[in-house]
Length: 72
Image (cartoon, rainbow, N blue to C red; front, top):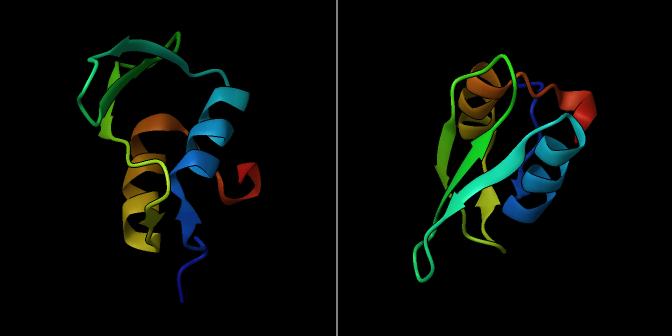
C-alpha cells in the first residue's frame, strides 16, 4: 500500500507553498502552473482545482518537489 493518500489538487498546492514553492508563471485560461523554489528546477503541473490526485501521481510530484506525506 502506498504511503500517499489521494488529495485534492488545491490541498497539494497549499502544501507545496508551505514548503517553499511559489507560483512562477501562470498562463491565463490554461490549467498549467509553473512553480519555482531555490535549489530545485522549475516544476510545471496541470492544476485542476477540485480534481483528486492519486497516490502514484503524488509520488511523482514528490520526487520532483521534495514533498513528503506529512506535508499534506
